[in-house]
Length: 168
Image (cartoon, rainbow, N blue to C red):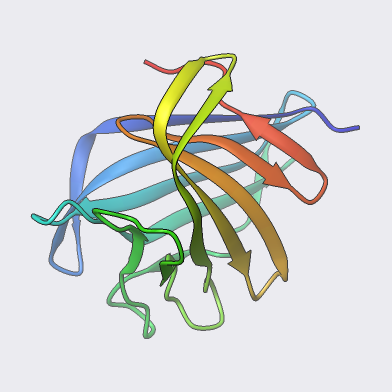
């Protein structure tokens, strides 16, 4: 079994992508303690409260060296468009495309349940939503739980699961 860890940190710096002011989130993925991927994810929030995903820079890492940038995309380039990451008021049955980079990243999400309560090592959370996410390029289905003011707290993956252990 591979031990995985994901660290996400909202950066102080902001950016502009395809005319949108964005927040930058640095994500580091570790497997058995070794850094295997580092991304900069770009999000913007509209006045209605919806959150849009407008791209990501990707560094795939092997033995401490960057080996590829597979999956990298940016709205406004090569036909990529912003994807709806989270509707302002999600409802059961809502379906939306989080990533809209043809041939690169085309992930879709369906809201399975709203007003979900869940518990992780980081605490108890209420008012959450549960989604089914499908990545058609990789043919991977994941189930996720997102909670207000926190974000992603639980993932059920094909080969295991992940949950939030600490935030702040």
